[in-house]
Image (cartoon, rainbow, N blue to C red; front, side, top):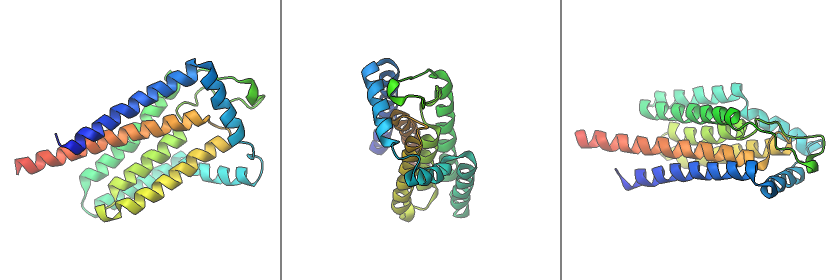
Length: 209
């Protein structure tokens, strides 16, 4: 196995471990849970003003329909250049990350009530954030879909947009900051794992020729 693939696999495992630590902290450490709630209060202070209107518009980029359209467009871009493996890799990344978050939401569903949130408590199935997972996974997938010369600018644009989506769901008080971090870690774990498999697959093909 190439060194790049080993590093990516290590990144995948590190992301999964970090996800488990974050989940344990926010569900079982009262002090950290309260700190998470206080961060949410500060971040969502302007949700009923212009900032809230912008956040509401941006957050819809993480909705299912825009995500499906973005995924279909990315697969089409990869297939148009004859790159079937990257098309499948990006598709697997997005689907795997989204499914993982869906499973975790149900498995970890529990109330995280905090007095500082008053009447605007966050729902029980908020960890990890589905919108954050989808946005960051899509950003990574598009970096795979496009030809190598476009990867850096596409990745930068994707990260900025994904970060805006993640921030918007916190501003709107749909998610705790930890939920967004959890979504990022799910997407990062899948991105590292898929890229490691892609590199290893390329190595095996080159060795067999």
